[in-house]
Length: 207
Image (cartoon, rainbow, N blue to C red; front, side, top):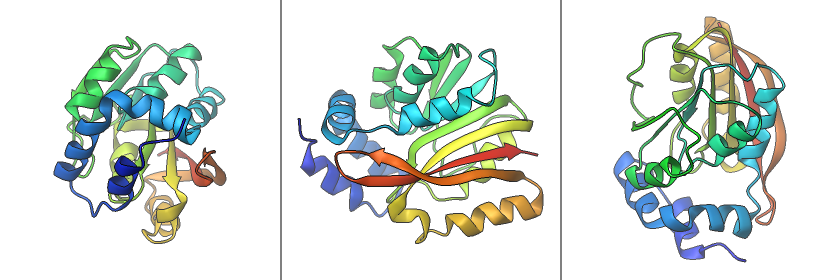
């Protein structure tokens, strides 16, 4: 099954802004899982969940930042993680995620702005499919490092199209230099198997 190319065209042509994101994902919410998993061969959620499972216990408190329809939440639940909270800019995507019953809580939040959560609120954070064309820039990693406790883990995908253009390598180095987080890995990994896209699978340790 092929993905909806009209949605993809709009997605990859995005120039950013939460309003544009909300509009696109409102239209896509009901078909998102089918289009990404079946149409694109989307493996980002499973890769991130597996990378996290290798580093923390199943009792950890996890923030799924930009959780969308809950694909990462499902993968985390399959690995025994039950204390997962999700935030996303799209109410329609959250409605789909809520029906999967894999989150403790779900709420609307804009990752281009500070996250309304206290410091050190979580043992870990995941962010899948968010660091891509016109969505959220690398500065959002600072907020993830803030809300994860010292020694906690952050796992995120960064689409290959934006890794160099948006300066992710440099931003990770600045996080390390300022003592906000250390870089554990930033390896090339598969992302959309059928679309032949890769990502950087970034693993950070909050400080």
